[in-house]
Length: 330
Image 1 (cartoon, rainbow, N blue to C red):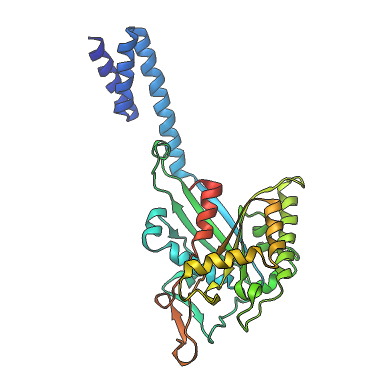
Image 2 (spheres, rainbow, N blue to C red):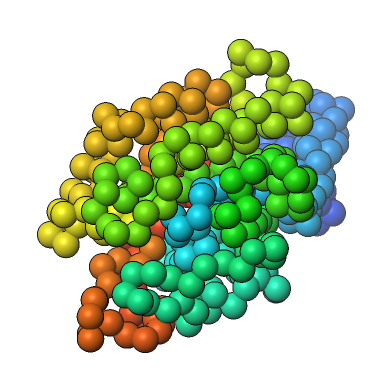
């Protein structure tokens, strides 16, 4: 009789809070306690816990965590093309399905099937100065672990701001919407291109010391705006993204081998000052070799304009996925 009474009472609670299994467990608990008072108390406690879980799940379903990612790099390293292709890759295939990624309304049309770039043969259109472009998208994680199933999926809004690289030479002055965005970012994508590190292209993007100075100024302002004491590392993931790694000699044979070789060479190159700066002041740091477009044809075979179907992106999503995993456990 006590088992039946426990189960009936448990199911009654279940109808109120929507958890049959938990309520049945409450009934069994009451039987084991062999006490009607304990039975009622157990059911009340379990019901309160279930209601709390339901409340948390409701809150998690309606609250979206905003992640601001500062994308920095001097002119010509491929920042705009990289972010455009990144959003295109996040929107497609198995990765897009896993993350439930959706481009936010108002994001530049460069993430559509036409990525709006010209090839002459490797010189792409520059981002107009004086403009701020916001790339935004929403991610909803799929519940995979027991904890995620218990508390529901999590939702994030990814914001990445884009400006002309020429405007970063005097960063963070004058203060603009972009400087305020970058210095309050939750993570940093620092883009340096392959030619700046190793040569191999007639397109010169400036001295490597320019990249070091830019990161140093950004970290100085971030220390001030976050109130972090000097000597403590910032809770800021920094991904050093080596763009245009398709220029590496080995890339045409094996992109994965080429990327690993590029990363090993970076640590032994003049970029070590840049790496030391990031590793000293930031809690998370990693290096990625990427190619937004893949190898492009030169000469008469070069298309006058590129469509998304014409390019072969390599590893472009890896830096963002690393940030989401390291800081947000996504």
